[in-house]
Image (cartoon, rainbow, N blue to C red):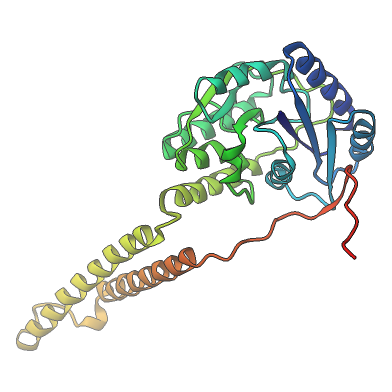
Length: 321
């Protein structure tokens, strides 16, 4: 079975059309599918459409959040509910073409674990395309995972990949990077990107600021997530050594000045003393933070989910007793 997870936020007009396209593709390619719509706090009646689709089609399921928790939380809920050995993600705005699903499956069959879509020809305004391309180049350069379009919402995964990755914040766009850090094989396919037919884009300039900060987080998680002292301790050690050398130099000049008052100004008149003390203290603090981070990493407490589900289209089992 192939589980298709679709995050939804105020996209009621496109949902029925998207389901019809998915169903047609599945019938044409003889695919066994399971469609999961995750309503991320929509206020336009999207949940009513999802509930109706689930009532009419047994393979459609819906999950509704109490409020908007973000795309990463919506994907996490969908991944947790997925039943298939293969999981696909699609955006709900009809810009991702469900007819491309067989191409993802063929690429996955070639031995890859994650396949990311590449919108080679994009039907978005330039002020959205240009920053996205800059961001994609930066992510590829920083992480070493060479993809043309890290932001593409159309991706395909083997289920075991998603069982090893925990999403929070806005890390959904970095799933291939997180998977690569776990040793999974990453691939890419060119897909058809279509103009938006309904509504408006949910992303603005703030997304790129958040994306850059998330990139720093991912770089730390993938490079030093299990050994934070290697980063914090290294920087701290350099700072501590620099501060110690400067203080030693100042101590030597102070001793010499005891005999020769003209050799150097008094210590309290030298800004270098402040810089040396700051470097020494900063180095000690960073190394201490590194030790604490190592303790937290070694004794991690499981985190609870970052979302709260109000209801699903599946019947709840009766409570025991």
